[in-house]
Length: 240
Image (cartoon, rainbow, N blue to C red; front, side, top):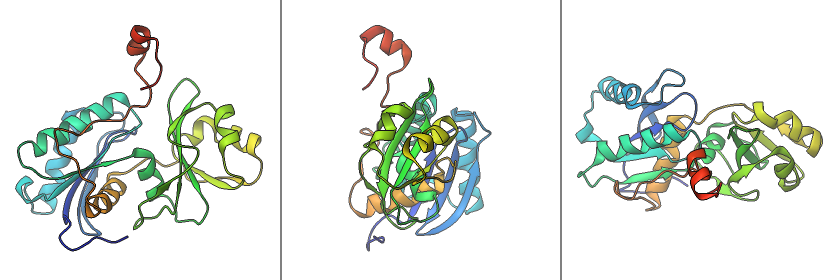
């Protein structure tokens, strides 16, 4: 799928769900600027200088931005809250459209193109991973979700749901990649242990906006999947 006529061209994208937040500015398929925040620094004090940096490099201002894209999770609870709050603040009152990009889809979109189904995984702590299967992943394609659907899994829960042949990608490989290979056999290919990037978020955001799948700043919300421990203790429920 390509951008349709009239779709937002100048997109500001933020990725804060993974260990190293990043910010990118794209015009169409051209990446005008991209910066990384220090690893583990998910606060606004690292994001806003990144936003200023990419705008300055492209000789643009916030008023020039036609649309926003943000990684909505799953991932770091703190990172997601900060990323969503930052985008809300940047586009408050402007009416600019926002694309909510699933973090696991962005992981797949930035990985090497393959005909195999991809299962993106991120570390969910406690020996579990956030995982989801996507097909037709690539820089110019909106990945199609499949089964296993987005969720929180132990290796033993995830392995029976994997297709006979698939490629595992994402930071979650460090948690259970080898274990899943043991459980699933040689047809399970260990791919890239990569994080989602703001450029990947921006490119998928463009495709979503071109399809008319935008939300307002007010409606923007992170997708945690699993509740914080304090919420588990209060409600007795682990998942949203």
